[in-house]
Length: 424
Ligand code: RM4
Ligand code: MN
Ligand code: MN
Image 1: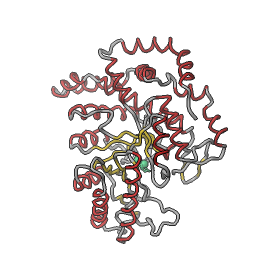
Image 2: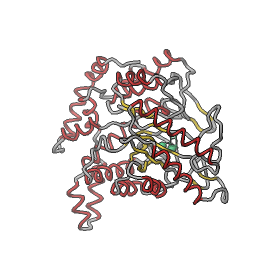
Image 3: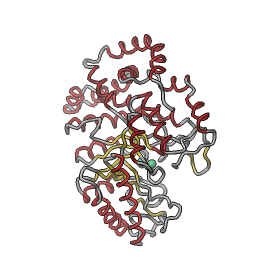
Image 4: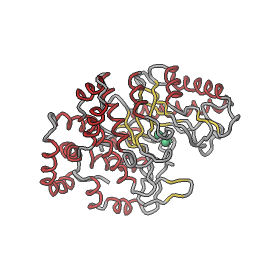
């Protein structure tokens, strides 16, 4: 379904005077608020094609109805999000969950919603129907050369799909590892994985990148072959300049200092980008900012600082994506909440008084350094993010609009109560 611009406009009109008051108040002490708003307008976060349906755990899944049953419908759903927030202008495909059949049609459908194709993702963590060899004991690391070959071939296929759609990167997330001590020779597993990645790397087009995602545990629970940023960076450094490390917020051991990881990867020019989500226990894939919003802000602080130090474009030089699962919420509403949390953190990071922070750091004034960060974090910037949406043609209140227009009910009417999206 397509959202009519006039409906957004009507909805905004009702909220406009209250918004103007809030915006004037929020903007009062910001010297160059227009510059910040332009940066927000330019910033987009990709939506993964597998996050548009209801998520689940191994205990169950409770779909809410109206799920997108095809790639076309998934693109429509991301188009809907983008129409409302003007910050979700890209979709990231997971192959083979979403194999494009007619590239031209898929591309023009995406363009009609003002969407681009973000990084493509391979999947060697599940066995597909009719697949010759199993990934039960790994894919790129496998002891059997033929299994490695099959997994390499799959990644090369994924790159081919991405080329047709205009993607510029492939994200490789491996579930490879071991579940019991003694199961795996770590060094051989690393070497096999490296050699496999080298073949994938060799298949990258000139202007492409490969993002190596790490994860500390699950589905293997004793060792993961790409288990942390050190292992990912080892691979990325050995592979070459087109290989970078991808940080998924949920893939760390408890209390890891993710902001420091980000700062150092950026310093080395090896940060690929992000999979945003939040978690309390593990790879929970909860709504971004739902549990640790201050951590998210500290990460964005390092991102902005580090990108500025290297003269990078915030909007385009790293890959930004949500990687979440929606087990008890409407996936579209949940994604709107996640994008909002990211935009708020980004705004906060743009507002940090860098001079004051640098001076406090240089003079070891711990209290002032902490005050600079906390004062910024405690500032309400919701009206600034809303103003950016308004200026780019989005909705002042995306979730309010979604509810008022009964969008989920309309999707259920169109697609049925039991349509199921591919994904986890
Ligand atoms: C993994 C990882 C990958 C995602 C899969 C579905 O935990 O986060 O990025 O593609 O889940
Ligand atoms: Mn991820
Ligand atoms: Mn994950």
